[in-house]
Image (cartoon, rainbow, N blue to C red; front, side, top):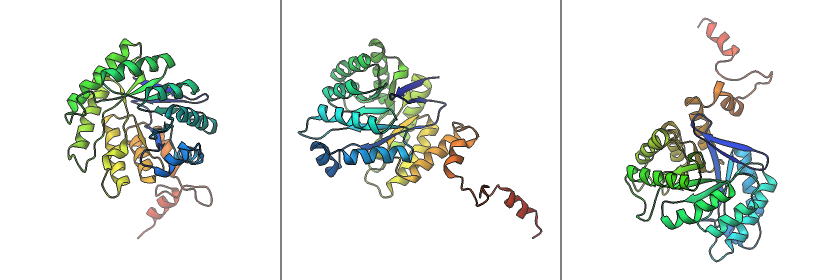
Length: 303
């Protein structure tokens, strides 16, 4: 069984086929968040701190940290944010940047084994990111596009992912440390986007035997009730074999979908996580669920 281990200074998270689905909180990202971008560029990280704490309290197992702000010193900001988040939470981090110098900066101050987000199948990116991943003993997100762009053919995306896994092995990075992002496209623009993901995830799980992740909210871009679409997508993706996702844990319907899928996949023995989250104790401490003793007594009464 392929397991990807990531860690902070004090906590380990294992991403795996037979383990509960891993939620990587997406909120610490200034892309599309004008106020957050302005604050971070000025060294004000109060909103970052609040987002980190809120996501962990909502159930995130990891946090993605991004500091992509135009014209800002991204390497310096990313390092500062990594140190801040690690000082107030104990969950492992995904260090997220398209700039190699920023990845290096974040990794240099990170305590534990990070997840690097990300490498693509482009030769220049492979040659610059994979040595960095190996140097710092990190795991890495492999995004299944290359110089030709993003193919709508899931089998082409599978081949790109396979190439990245093979190139990672050349650098001494085992497949357990490569988490493939099959690329989720907006279902409102590409009608087959959902089926594409399910197809490639199944192949990645059973043929390439690697763990997977994605930017789950991409699927609902441009649609109303986005969280409803995201929840449906994640339930199906988990059924197809996906093992983690970068998404917001602040939406109850999304977290409920993930926890329910874990139950159905047998990844929540005795439904322990589900019961812990949703059981409502009565005044005398007994469950209010329909299966309680009170419910059984009522059924025995004559109508």
